[in-house]
Image 1 (cartoon, rainbow, N blue to C red):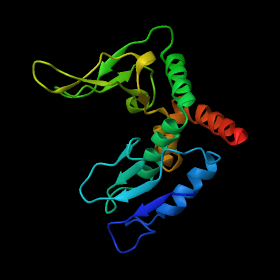
Image 2: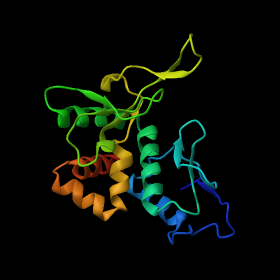
Image 3: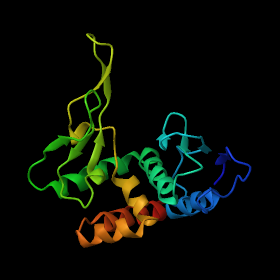
Length: 197
């Protein structure tokens, strides 16, 4: 885990308020991927923030007081996809397979903030969420999402949701019972990453 640092908002820099070790989770994720998380160099705690993964900042930011362990696993999943661009292509292929012969999308976001979901019949729609590049509207100056296109998306929730299942047994059971195939897909990709390193 060379270079991975943790900046903590609390005095206890190793254990989150919800009783899990940030460093332990990061070490297990690093081992699971065979060290293939090059876009992650820090995990930060901030008060009153929605957790996120930033590729440009090489960071994960979580709410150290309230975020459960599965939130950290989820955000690490984004960095697995960021660090291994070929996995984005694999995720797109997985979603195409789950969608069947016809790709359709729906917008789960509110006005002005498009959030596109591929209709894939997953146990949670969030598992098939995709992110498009934004563009600035000349008329309003607001950032608008490009039209949904799985082939042109910049990232997905496939690996982040698979990692979340690792620490959320209820969601994992629901996924298995729905025959999502997400865990099997994910484990195959992780085996490939470990074997490559």
